Length: 139
Image (cartoon, rainbow, N blue to C red; front, side, top):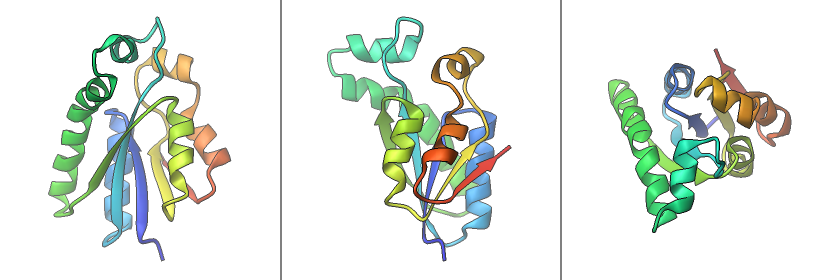
């Protein structure tokens, strides 16, 4: 029985579909929504803003907040409370590292901008191949 679900979201339509899937399929489970803000890179605006911020942790939370607010709205539509978490670094690595504390991971098949997909690589595929727990990839 699945009692703890980790849902990775990035603000994309696919990640919102993944959250809806988790809420529909794992009714009654504890659901934690994770937003991972990427590693700093000269080619990525948000993460570069983190690297140059006076308080990088606060800037990370600030960048994640709109995505988490939307996740709460979606969960509210399902009359479900969710927990939230913010990670920093490479999204696939961060999701895989956190997966051990859950029964399953749910994420969208792709998300973010085209440049994010080119720079970061295929997060869903990496998580699917490296996770120690079952992974549901929603498309």
